[in-house]
Image 1 (cartoon, rainbow, N blue to C red):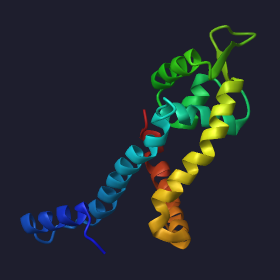
Image 2 (image 1 turned 90 degrees about the horizontal axis):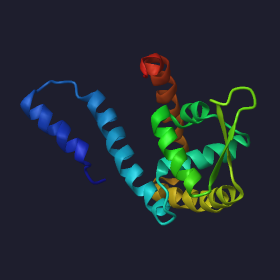
Image 3 (image 1 turned 90 degrees about the vertical axis):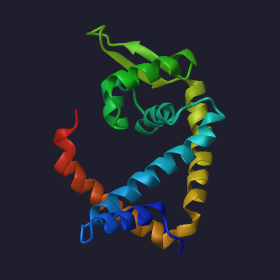
Image 4 (image 1 turned 30 degrees about the vertical axis):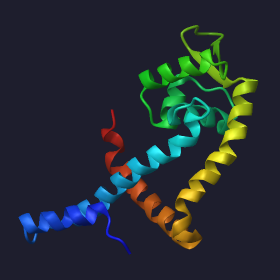
Length: 168
């Protein structure tokens, strides 16, 4: 197997600080590098539709929940700030992909839903996006993918428990 960039970084740290425990860097460094590369790669097909990954995630959230959501609910579902969601929703509304409805009791509260064109777009894009993402993971094989997904799920639960309260 070819050496990755993180292995080189670890080796360099061992030369500078022999005996330094770089095990956390081996995991977190690789997670960060993979996340950056995957983010860049998985955004590529969406650019052809004029969407960012964050906008795609909002459309997907509205589609998979199957109900109206407030901007705050969308922020929680997509792990984004309220301000970022507001900006993205403005773009999606301008494109006619999302509709806003004021709450009957409190006009300050907005309820958002997919328009017919928004639903058609996400329904058309999601299978292609998943096929593309599967192609990115092909080299691992199904068993390794399942193993990796399980390990990452364990790490995510651990981190959410430890760091969840620290998020702004």
